[in-house]
Image (tube, rainbow, N blue to C red; front, side, top):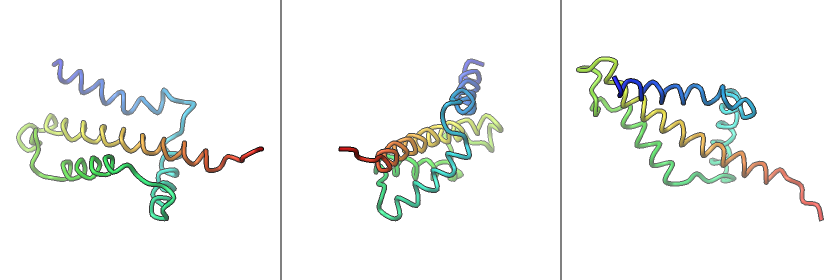
Length: 114
């Protein structure tokens, strides 16, 4: 029961984060900026941290891999908990890169006054 409450709290943090941060960006802004970030990376104007690239690729492989730490075939919905935790972790990594991109873009758009 304790474990289920922790999982519920983690999911609430993920889905409630956007609601709590009303001063921050919306899901639509994130999607738009994510596209800009990917485009900037391909043109060479933005460089992802290698560690985050490796973590995101490994996380996607884990989620898509049929072998799990908690197999969904045996445990049913409880078997999806590890995949949900990985997806939450990946979301946090991607949003940290997105915030770094926004911060860098803000400085690139700044006008130098001398």
